[in-house]
Amino acid sequence: MTGEGLDARFGRLWAASTLSALGSGMATVAAPLYAAARSDDPLVVAAAAGASWLPWLLFALPGGVLVDRLDRRRLMVVIDWVRVVALVSLGVAMLAGRAGIPLLYAVLFVVNTGEIVFRSASQAMLPTIVPTARLERANGWLGGGTTLAQGMLAGPLGGFLFVLAESLPFLANAGTYALSAVLVALIGGSFRGGGDAVPVGTRSMRAEIGAGFRFLIGQRLLRAMAVLIGLLNLTLTAAMAVLVLLATERLGLDSVGYGLLFTSMSAGGLLGAVVGDRLIARVGATWTVRVGLLVEAGLHLALAASTSAWLVGFALFAFGVHGALWGIVFHSLRQRLTPSELRGRVGATTLFIAAGGNCAGALLGGVVAGRFGLTTPYWAGFVVALVVAVGTWRVFDRAAVAAAYAGTPSRPAAAPGAVTG
Image (cartoon, rainbow, N blue to C red; front, side, top):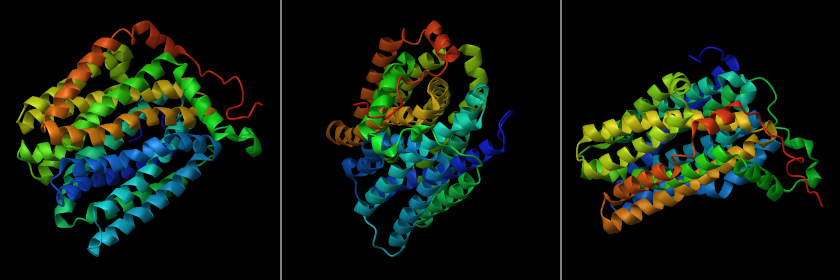
């Protein structure tokens, strides 16, 4: 299951990631359903996504510093157990009839605060676990496991469990995090990034964050892709934040049908993950990025103009393929080009930029849909995606991408985070 050239340590990381994605996917489906069952205000429903993404703005950059200072494996285990406690508390409160929307938002905030650091640590660990030549395959398998679990399985399962009892998707999520903690703990080895080479008394978190930011902006392709993801996430999350309303009001779907929309996207993501390393090697990263921008525009157009659940499902499938391929290209480039002692901070900086778009988009989607109509966020996303595609077409030329793939990690001029007087 782990693919050629990937050993048991990667297998444990893959299993932990896939189980976590299964639980997170069920909670992702259940959270807006829970909010929508208590309010028909688009802003209230969209705020569930906002509560999920706000921690990424607040804690992504400090989290990257922790990833580079501490043992990444141990940090992931601690985070998983904290998330177990938070989700069990929410589930018990729901069973007791004492959970409201504010408690839901609070738990989503805590869980996603942990997800920031967990994801940064996982991505920073990967180049230590697998050979550089297998990064595309490893990232593809990780992405495939996530999409299989989070969309194809978690969507309908989360909707079904929600119908049985509102607490079940959240309690199931707690169980998957517990299993993840055990699997990550079984990965052998030490996974310190090297940031501990700087004496504790001379460290400055601001300086360490700055080192990661400077490295990112100094890498042309990584900088361009990070900015693109932040901008496109704004329109995409605005669209997804009110998708539950579009599904029920325009497409006539129930909670299971709404979950199946995520299944369609995950099916595409699974296909992209399985064939991604070979497809990218054949057509090149340049056209992978360029065609993906057009696919993103097509998704927004379908959501804006169609009332057919089948057409929308196909558009989400195509978007899933695009998302998997983009993830493989971006993660592999960043892991290849970034030295170990900076991987946590560079990864966290890109997550911060992406989260800025996600958080703003989640709230913007509810405001725009409530004031101008349910399809307005989708028309806006279509226009933005087309403008971005035209404006960045030449940035991802073959020569620049080939040079990046052939490059080696740049070394920081001074120890990251040191106070240099």
